[in-house]
Length: 618
Image (cartoon, rainbow, N blue to C red; front, side, top):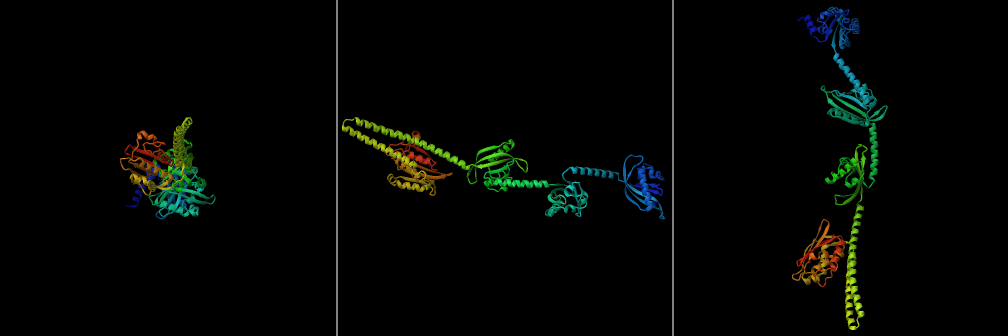
């Protein structure tokens, strides 16, 4: 294939514009692509014409000057970007043209030639990109931070090919300072943060992780500043890593946080000196702040309690739900709420009482609504109230007993006094000495009965108040054994048998005199009111249950008709059998002794089968 054929094929098929010109800048030849560009049907139509025939004067003149320069210097002009304005078209086009000197076979300069590439689309893209860049810069000027594009090539070289103008505000640099290297920024990083910051960038790029880092800068003008940087690195097809990021100055936030922390620590120190339990909970019932007293109450450190709720602290779920509802009501309604009394049972079984004031509260750091609780321990006051109530109860019982006693005294002594007064009246009216002697015998008997009544009443008083405040450690089994020794004669005489279920180690604090009197009355009554047709058997059972101590004494004696006598069983001078030794004061004294020690006494009985006394001692 000869050279002319190759040249012809090239001129017909090359897509770039190709032309040849003589020394006067007239076209010698153009290829098919350029002919189409000029709007010619045949490339031959351009021969002999110049650029002024196709382009506007400005572009044609500039092209002519270039060709004169080439003819003069014999040096090419490479990749010159030109704006082309065609005479028959208003459409704007751009090209990149390389122009060369044209020589013949003898080496003589005979003209110029050139190759032109249409870059209109590329130019438009660049213009749009520039406009976007300008728009982005204008936007970034309004935003309080630096927008940037981070790039690291496969060799590890890093730079910011794009940085908004805010880089001057953040780093006191210009965008062009970081187009090829990050060294200007690195040189401003505080020495104490330098290694940590470089490692954070390295890890983010290496593992393509989100970069979110705070560090200090030492700037020439502003001095020490805090900044926060963010970026999301992404791997590119060519092996480079590109990330789009944002940097803001957070110095004011750091200062505000430091001041908040100082105030919070100061506030916390004040709260920790207060004996009240003080804490803050959010809307979901989580602790966001507690003082030392509250933490010690729950047996945890203040740090351990933050973020936990009542269920985490061992509070039953139903009770925790009540606490949350109270806090939410205070938050929603914005009103102070007072919980006057509330009991809590600690893990060791101790019951404590609190009074709580709940106040709407806005958290300083998050500005979220919460509930502030101020809890006062009122256990001591509550115990005093309970003690007072118990005392009032005891006084009430004592008053009842006093009324009963006064009634007995009034009734019995009035009967005796009336009897003696009548006998004296009769004595004075009798005329014979014999009749007077008979009346004197009656007077002696009445006097003896009066004396017996007074002795009985004294015994009641002595038993109620003698050693009433004496409390000692007592062993119930040993006390029962002691009473059995006192009753040895009666036990042997009546052949009494015992069935005992008593723990030898059963000990508690009690009034020893009261305990002996109670047991003595119970056992002596069981023997005294034995059944004549069988040997007496006494069953004794003692035990403790849920912190209380119980004594049960049962016999197989005469029994009591409970339907008739239940209401008057423990009354004074109430007897239920024909036993001549019965006075009806034993059970009266026993009940008073049991109740004065905070206990109770109950009776189950059936005639001719026996009686069981169930005593809760303490």
